Image (tube, rainbow, N blue to C red):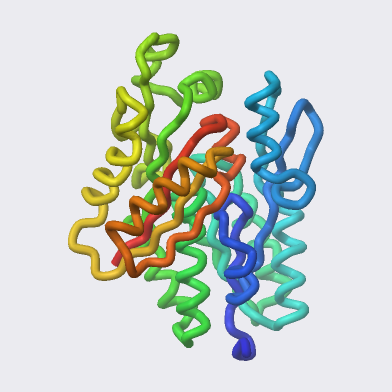
Length: 290
């Protein structure tokens, strides 16, 4: 049973928190907006990521994404305070990737005068997709265990730098179209099998980690980067992601289970907020370690 007045964690659908986990921990998920050929859809409500990626495979479509706006955050925070008389801890997408953080902060400021006894705290995760979700889940667990919101905020400020995303793209085309290809631009149109592996750096920006030249080396490449990024861990959380690549994601999960047999490793669909730029066929993982 949820302790009375335990602060409520809010995060966006981009965080890929599994619905059953969100329900167990009382995490409130706000859907992102996906705009396909000018028509708006709510992520996971009237358009699912798999549907979007299949369309992207078969049609040349324009896809844009939008974070929840100030009004949506205001309504969400207000509803939690009114119904549960709880403080709120919101964990946003990287402010360098989306307006998500700014919208949540503005909504929190609007509510501070109306509800002086309830606090709405917004943290920029500096991440997106699975690592953002891992941070939200850990925050909710700590709050339910009785930690103060101040202690959990301090934990998140440190832990976000021990979290990360590692993802391999099926094609460079979408990255080039979105203007996020950077120094790998010269590889577009190459006849070689080029697979970039991306991460999100500590500034919250998508950055290339390495280039794989044979697709059979994708999973070993992801595992190698994971090992380098989580040295001497005492606790490790993992979540596999994919964009319409279920079979490949399952192979990645099995490879991870061989290395980390005691871990529960879920598979989730990659958030459209980045999938619109990365394209279908992506596989990867999010991690959080102590």
